[in-house]
Amino acid sequence: MKNAPAVPAYRQVKAHVLAQIHTGVWQEGDAIPGEEALARTFGVSRMTVNRALRELSDEQILERRQGSGTYVAQQKYQSTLVEIRNIADEIAARGHAHRSELHRLERVKANEALAQRLGVPPGSQVFHSVVVHFENGVPIQVEDRHVNPAVAPDYLAQDFATQTPNAYLMRVAPLKGVSFVIEAVLPPPAVAEMLAMPPSEPCLVLHRQTRSLGKVASVASLWHPASRYRFAGAF
Amino acid sequence: MKNAPAVPAYRQVKAHVLAQIHTGVWQEGDAIPGEEALARTFGVSRMTVNRALRELSDEQILERRQGSGTYVAQQKYQSTLVEIRNIADEIAARGHAHRSELHRLERVKANEALAQRLGVPPGSQVFHSVVVHFENGVPIQVEDRHVNPAVAPDYLAQDFATQTPNAYLMRVAPLKGVSFVIEAVLPPPAVAEMLAMPPSEPCLVLHRQTRSLGKVASVASLWHPASRYRFAGAF
DNA sequence: GAGTGGTCTAGACCACAAT
DNA sequence: TTGTGGTCTAGACCACTCC
Image (cartoon, each protein chain N blue to C red):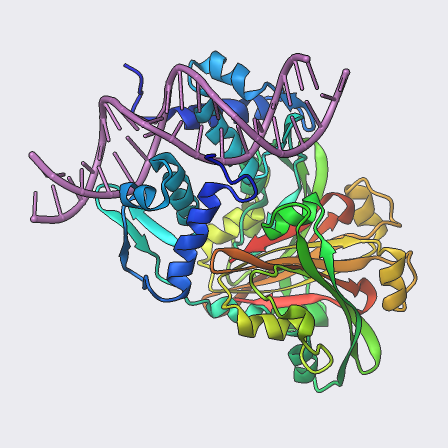
């Protein structure tokens, strides 16, 4: 009777700690209870609590100091936040007209690879959207996005004709971290069609994972025709 | 007598696994010994091995499949955009062998476009180098660089077999700012040949301008075969 | 010295995959 | 059925910080 197999105990401890931080019970810089105390509270062993706290520490949610205690880490201000550009804003900044088409908005079951990238249990339900963005009437980006329901439970109820998924997520989930991969690949036929491009021409693809409060908020693949798109930046 | 305090056992196990991979004893895709076997080999408990393998799995060095086994993950050729790292260091960080070939090192006259990007008068003399970088013997990057003589007057006298142009420039000119553009294009025949790739396949190109001391230090175009290269970053 | 995190053990049960 | 990884326990010793 010791295990609740569905959700491992160390994850429940992590969830509890995150909830305390979420709700403001534990503030930035506060010391949180020690491993022993948390172990007693949850009726688990100290090793289990240790794993939970260690992972949260790896994720920069907590800060641990040997001999001292465990503290809620300071939220880091992201001046690089501007780098997470909203395509609508970007097009507007060029003085062009932006329009988007919602092609898909649904609940799907996460396969193993997706579940891993989203940090959810394989087979669990996640949200999925496909939006095509147009610049002056020309398709410029296919946004294929999977969203963690734990972060944005109302995702399916949004009107993505008036607000891009990115803008919505930025609003409901304070951004904590981003990682991305850029590659050039040939588009799947469905993508080529949405971009009105020949499938024989390469796409410039940005795969982006955004994190918020210790969870992965969403993973998105942004497909652009290489012939009419490039990434630029400076720092 | 159980602990060697200096280096925790789980780190030693990680180091051993990494060494096996780096020396090629365990190849990409190979299954490695099970937790029980490794625990016996090292005279540690299974939990200790488990932690080592779990962390390596988190780091994408290994791939674990419940019920099946633990495998060496496919090495991705990735580059970090955010830090201007030296490609030689980057390859070394992956535990691979770096080699470079100097194809060109000369003084050229800047045409109008180049002069503008370098911030020098049109028609003035600038330095030009072309270097091909190899990872484990496979060409992975063509570095086509123009350098502002005002910033690095001794550029032509360097030995770029022992030090990459990037490393040299970072040393002589404190980096002040960077701007870049990433695009996917078909390579010119000369580039395709240096990269040993078909000219019909796209390249992932990073155009980068680095500034130092209020001047443009150099502009570089870094060409990579899209099929075996991608950019990655996080913040 | 008391309290904290860092690590480790020798077992155990489970879910899952391959056979 | 067998072997794998995934998780958990109830202790233990250590290094470190703080008082």
